[in-house]
Image (cartoon, rainbow, N blue to C red; front, side, top):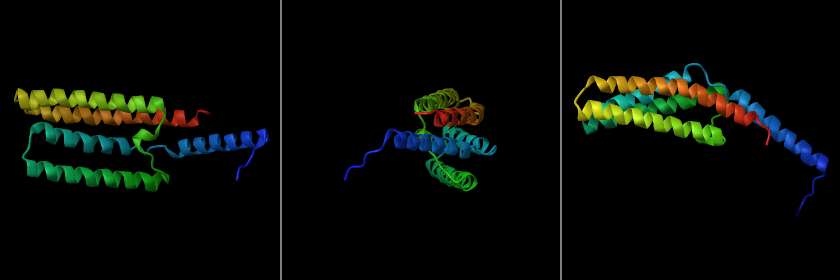
Length: 154
């Protein structure tokens, strides 16, 4: 069974879609504590991995990281009523996320070379700190890009 919309009905439906996208953008205001906690979780994981710990220790740290991410996602969902993974945005948001990944990877590789390759052990701590700061600052930028894309009309 096929349904035909009049031009006015189609415009009203598109306006409703635009309004719902704007409503979602308004609800996706990340709490101030979200990105710093995410930065600490990711930075801590990178620090431990860059130090080169024993495998059982790494498994324990991965478990703590996974539980921390789960709790962070759950708290965000309770606070905002929605959850959107980082890949759900438009092209600008996805580019920003890809660039964040590339920068984080570059920091991690540089820290690994210094810490494990050149045996400058304190470099692991600086690597984790750099990743945590990058995640915190870039996360806020990413949120702004994502909300702007959601508010744009199709």
